[in-house]
Figure (cartoon, rainbow, N blue to C red):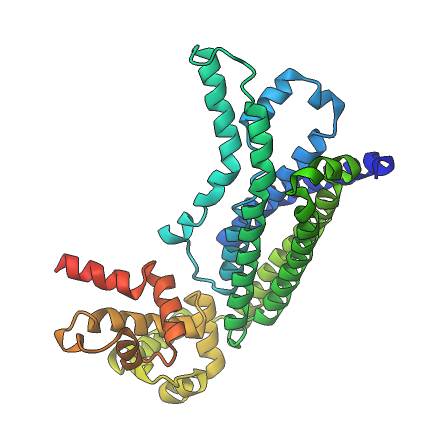
Length: 382
């Protein structure tokens, strides 16, 4: 393995550099800002960890006290956010109206697992400089090294759980057929998750002996971190190039659809008005079996026109458009005294939901609260 260390280091460095470049291009792109920024952050953190591996294999870096000081206080291996970033990227890719809620942002809190070594080092340095600690050889380095070994366990578990959540979300959204380019997006996301599953398998094979104390040093001496970071570099190559191409495909697809279904302003306003009338006045959304064909027949508007208006001008899928009205109906009904004897599922059914799971997921997505949390807020307000 060490005979190829020079080659592996070049692969790792090139992977990190490409990750930084593609990440920047995605971050500053004007189209699909949230989607591309989530992917950009995902690629950046992988590239940062990969670059860290490259640095620690360079003599000029490890021999310098200055660089070692920087390495102690500046975290470069930030892995815990990768799972949430992948999950939110999946959701944003399949849901044009997706926005990060406060509850979503709290899922990044476990990043403290990655920041803890640097925070510990900074506290130790401050204690030395202020005279609170007199002994410079307190074993803090050994403590941090041991911590870093076992920190990989929650990192692996977190990534695995979020991959499973992403896959489940893809399955739930694959039933939609009204969004342009959905099939292409689903194919790309399934490929993306498959690649991450392969990497997780490689990581697990490496992780099992790595966390066993008597094998940790032997493993590092034999193969170092190359079995993990070389595949990571390859993942960056693929994820960066493919992700950028997907972004360009989205832009072209949207422009084609807009040019194909461009409606005069008057016709667009009339179509939106008819759709809102069917929902707000006629409450057609209360029919749990409502679909595009039924709405087209009810309003007299061609299904393709309805789809184009909802997708391109309202930036929603058909299901999102309908379910927003159902959620608002639920929020109104839950405040009515006559509904106190019904369960949440019973009220949701009266609002047009035919699946409790769909109701729970949609309500949380649109309000940032569970139905129970929303009910509690209503009670407190009243």
